[in-house]
Image (cartoon, rainbow, N blue to C red; front, side, top):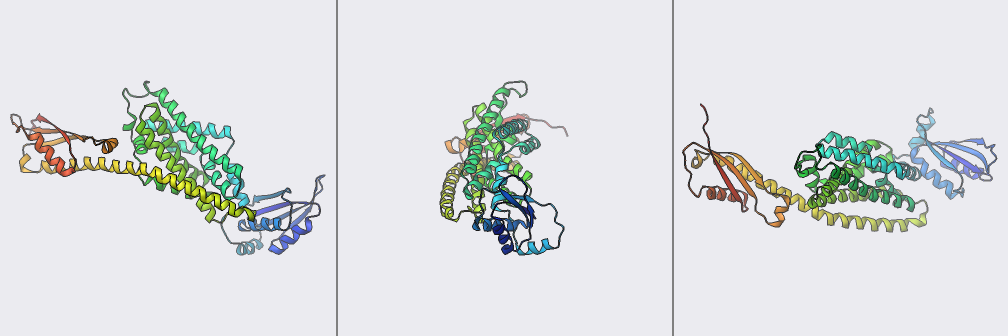
Length: 428
């Protein structure tokens, strides 16, 4: 339930009471004794679904928008009459006015926003370098990215240009700050005793996950956008949803910053693509769902104008996502090809171990060097094998070529194969 309190200007009390009576809601009138221009305070308990139509009726009746109308959440209403009102006004979403106010509250002051974002990025960067999923998720609790992501979309839908511009600005500048912070942290840590000599960021699983994203990563961003809108319009689970949105944005942004610190353009490209796709997808989902939820500007003459802007933004977002998805699709295919070659090599070697032609040999270790970029540059995968043989045995001169031909047949690609033969004796 909500408690709507209207500070009624002098001369407007009758129209407020008439509106409440026509809406079928109860009210109480308190005489205003202040020195201001208000003559009374009218308190009206209503269900959440009744707030927006009631405020619309007040505006239609001519109540001056410069007057105060306060909407507060009532935790408990002790009255059987509340059930009748709830049954008359069905719905689960909050009013447009509440939505706008909550979106503004979710976009904190710039100083607070950037302090929390920098702290979150530092923690997330440390979690990436430590390969600690728990640390990364913990950092997301601090990240304040949910507010700007939703504020921008709410501002567009309800025709609040200031709110929309603030949301976009905080997102763009915030992600740039996150990348720069991670790059600075990486530059300061690189070459220190805190990291092993020759530390390669691409070998860390948590980082590798962000630089080899698949098209499935879109589901995380789209799901985060849906959850963000639902939590906002129904006022549930905002903390957990904020974590989901932050997970979609901060870790890949921090990964891109580490790519800058280590001078790895491929890391910057793939992680940067991921964070941009996630950002755009969250905004796209929020815009569409807010409009489909029925939110509109309260001035009916502005609806067509807002719809035109909304449609333009959706088209731009879709085009941008489609372009970036080409990179995402390329990464998905390249990752699949490298994994497929390694799998096929391993499977074929296991088969060769069981064949009579290689009865005296056992292929024990295999190393496949085939990077994502090699798929598109045409470089051959390099396969290094370690084969055990009984002491004194001599293999044919073309043995490595025979192994290579078998592996090339299995993988369907040209390979550079090195076979290392080791004389081995094993005790009975």
